[in-house]
Length: 406
Image 1 (tube, rainbow, N blue to C red):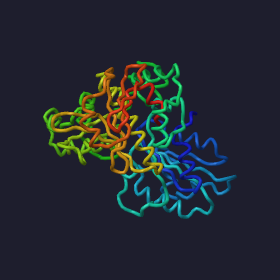
Image 2: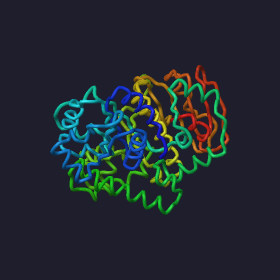
Image 3: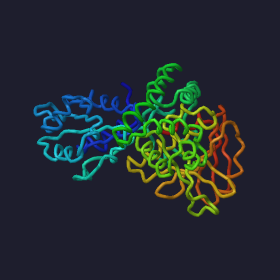
Image 4: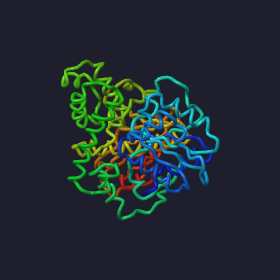
């Protein structure tokens, strides 16, 4: 089993002080593998899955028996997909609060673990929540994430030597996506079958369990229309016309797909930006391999890499990192902006091959007052730093930049 980038953070923030760890993320991104990797390094423990009939009986009648009474060292108890159980948080709180000896508990789920809270006692103060992402370029070779300032310093000093497999790994990510099974199998037919199966399971199983709504075939139609809308200003009105349902229904379906880690939406950043858009969002898929258009697929790949940065740094206490984009009413646009504690931190533009700095940098950089900016291109072999006022703009290949990320 391969160590994942969250492994050390879970040990440091949760298990050193015997807090529970909640790990959520897309279906088949590696949550169970991460949990079993942690279990392998314990002298005692157990793995339970809500889909196991015997475990459901134990959880219903006497949940405290999941913790070993006699064990060498601190046991690790893994509860997979436990959020499907009614009042699971209340039951888990009872198990945790009545532990006679220290035990570490790891809860995993393919939907956001706060979705299923329907009353009952809060677990506040008893756990930390981490969001696990699929593989990125850096994680294909390293599981040692850097803090924000260190990462920026390493990028602009070009502290890492280029490796022959960096470009090959990027091409694999572009072709197969970041989910472990298709990425490491490197088989197009298997990847296509896996992709179809994943979409069906997300909608036919996970969405059914989450929402109990009957219109699953219509939501499958919605999902089939989303890849061609990636990276563009998102209009629910056009979807309403295609699917012949109300705007409220479209909004409700999209909210479910967000909760199930099928897609995510970013909003425009408008503070102190002259004539900025304020409402229109852009959507991206967690599995960018569904997207046919190469430019849109590459932009989605970068969006997922940036979101992984934001989630990791937020979940590990580096600050509140969020992802947005820049666009004004004259259609001048920078693809992404990472904010730290609501303030602009790192703007990022994405191009297939254009190594000339975007003309819109001169529009937005003076208003953002960021010290660094990135223009990432798919074209290999690029690395140039430009000075734009008080800002350093690095125009570089994705295979060069992404290996510094998480």
